[in-house]
Length: 154
Image 1 (cartoon, rainbow, N blue to C red):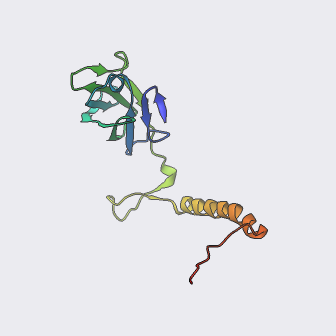
Image 2 (image 1 turned 60 degrees about the horizontal axis):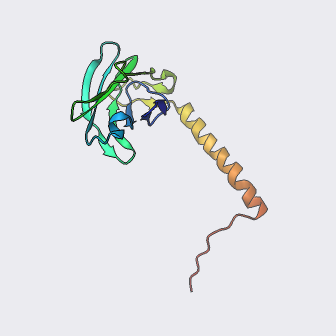
Image 3 (image 1 turned 180 degrees about the vertical axis):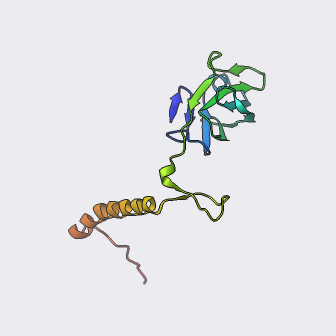
């Protein structure tokens, strides 16, 4: 997902209480900085302010962060020389969506237990996979183009 030039996420949407991987190929990467830190917070007041060192790769600097329950994620970047990329003093601001509760079932027996997806959702995924396999492999079997692996034991 590319929301802003030179900042990429590993997901289509930023959803609260999830971990997201951020890739940065902006000004500090292009200038050859050896170390880049992501400076981030949540909401208008930059709540839960944090800064972590990003890992340098051939494709840019990367880091994983835990998205808190908020309406937005605010980012800026700095290198070890204290040079900043803060979107021309505007900061990088991305909306965070609420988790879709229709797919989540709460387990009343233990509040700390992980949330589970509804069984109907899981069954619909299984049915879609079965239909895909039927559409893909049934014509091959009927036409005789389906080859089995034969064990040659001499």
